[in-house]
Image (cartoon, rainbow, N blue to C red):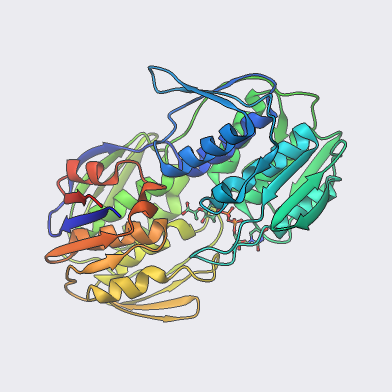
Length: 419
Ligand code: EPU
């Protein structure tokens, strides 16, 4: 297994660009199933999860072509094998995103039921309940979701809990349903708006994405489009933390700051100066140590759970005590045990982490347990004294494009060690 060797202590400086957002790209790739024509996606990030999603569509019979501009043309309009096998679903839970589009377009789907994962049990009951309310019949058999419907029919659906991929799944399914669907208690993440924009450019009629209520008027068919994946707000937030914990001064290009305003505000509270315009964010950390900042994760526009692990590194080296409450997932503190092995002083009580900032942390051999946990260990390695080796970095390759190259470009010292 590849590892990352990080020599800590370098202050980051310079300018980098964000890649396309993984969590915008995944539902967009799934949405090509709804189209009767080929769809072109631009600025797709080169990530393991994207490859897995392509593998999934490919296994059903889609044709995917890459051109000289690195744009992908995806033809998913004539699928033969309407199922997502367990081999793929077990490596990527977001495979569930093909459920809504398949039932809407082909009237059936067989999708392996995703199991729990490192950050929580992550059931899909909200997806299934909502799909049933659109008229689908759903059976669970041999570890698979078997869904069928002659024609989905629009309905008023209130989600029992806020779910990002659930909102996306049902929004996609409703585009081809008969009549009007009104979704409430929906997720408002920027990726929901991105997906609605893309579906509307394919001929869908969706209003209200990004608000509490999304209205979808079903149409008979969807067509091809060419769509550019927006930049990854979590990647941007991760690099802001990298600058904050290394007394760095960097500019991140091609990112709309409104997508991560809460993250910007909280990082700013810890000490760095942050400025931004429509398309870039600059950060400069002049204080020797950050101030502690309490955070509570919650759905957008609140502090994202996907930035919790990274932010904990700011608090870990801060001048004081802070609290982090994780309210979205029940087991998203796996990085804390590894951070403590590097000299951090963090106590976890259920969904609450109490962080006593320490003056210095030290390199160690640590193990990544999920994508954002890996990012936090790399960030800790950047500000630790000595060498840190992060094992199981396949997690990081699922969601950060060329992370060590980008950080090295800013002055970090990270080497990828071969298996
Ligand atoms: N939940 C249920 N039932 C459901 C769906 C969700 O109980 O049917 C619960 C979950 O267990 C969790 C909460 O609701 O406690 C929120 O989960 P959500 O469904 O919103 O998560 P998701 O859609 O599976 C997406 C991102 C995650 C991100 C979460 C929260 C994608 C592909 N994944 O997951 O991203 O953490 O929203 O913002 O968009 C990551 O990128 O590292 C990542 C894990």
